[in-house]
Amino acid sequence: MNANLIPKKVKLVEVGPRDGLQNEKDFVANDIKIELVNRLTRAGLANIEAAAFVSPKWVPQMAGSEVVMAGIERRAGTLYSVLVPNMQGYEKALLAGANEVVIFSSASEAFAQKNINCSIDESIARFEPVAWAAKRDGIRLRGSIPCSLGCPYQGEVTPSQVLYVARKMVDLGCDEIDIADTIGVGTAGRVKTLFATLQATLPDAQFSGHFHDTYGQALVNIYAALEMGISIFHSSIAGLGGCPYAKGATGNVATEDVVYLLTGLGIETGVKFEEVARIGEFITQAINRPNHSRAGKAFLASQ
Image (cartoon, rainbow, N blue to C red; front, side):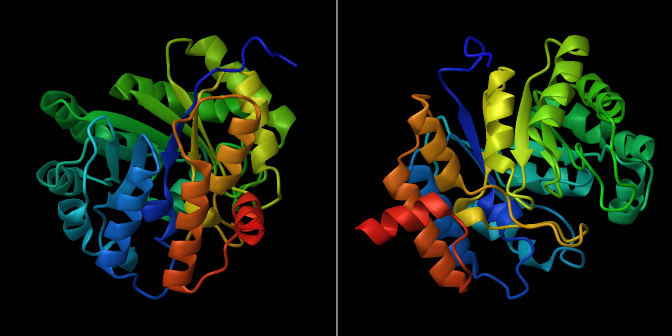
């Protein structure tokens, strides 16, 4: 156990409003999305992935993202992030007042072809003008690397494959790089090996952990990453989400469960557990979906 490396403070990136809802078949009304973001803001989340400026043809749930961004109540010091696939999306994000734009490139060639119909190198090239514009405009740039611990199409993904994309993200000027276990197949040992490889080669890069709970390993993987000194993690309220391009992939790890874990470790998050538990109940009732947070449900049942 590397207790000395475990951070005293962790930033949680709440991805529920975007990654959590994007897979819902029935359109979630924009006023519900706005209320969700507002409640998460009041609960103390420092970074909220609020929307995505993508084609409604491919992700119908994200239609109206400009309405959501215009309607939310913003708290000073909170980052409101949006996913953008190209310059058209970036320009909309800029008009919407996004604090951070998120670009993405898979660690798996097979996933890149299935997801965005191009190679990894081609996807990185597409994001060069977005990265340049973000730096010009003073907007934070975050890079996400899906399938960092496994791919639904090619299977195993090696640390060297992830490192290749991470280097590209660093070259683009990403302020933060998400290591995403899109299909939730990662284990603690593999998580440690991957972060050790990245940290040894790119010691100045800021990495975060984005874990799905498909195999029930997300909290264990977070703890493993904490032992490697990782201090940024993604989570989704009530464990909402999945991946439309990864068959069988279940939701992200629940925000409530992560806050409960970190609080128990004495790690500061700035997030109020009781509030996020109630937010999980709010959004699952609003969209008629099950609440996948064990800690949240246990707390609510005790009240």
